[in-house]
Image (cartoon, rainbow, N blue to C red):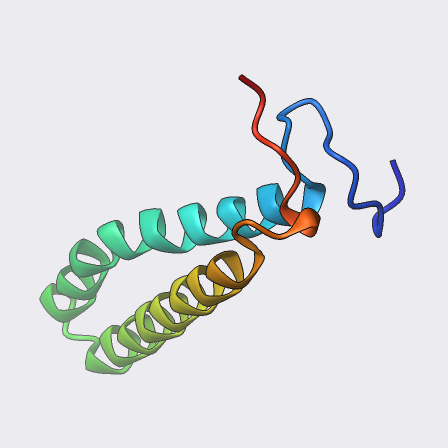
Length: 85
């Protein structure tokens, strides 16, 4: 399938829907791990690295929120595709 193709693939959902869910999942999953990364940096005395990781965590949270908004917009629209039953 072409990158711009919106026909349902193997999942039964349009590629763009699957892509957004995937981006959202990975952003949220990474967010789960960041607290440990921040603590590791602080334990190493690297507040600069801790601040960087906190920034990355905020960016991922924003990314997940944006995906959520796009998914809400696509929900029930023809672009979302139909779920396989």
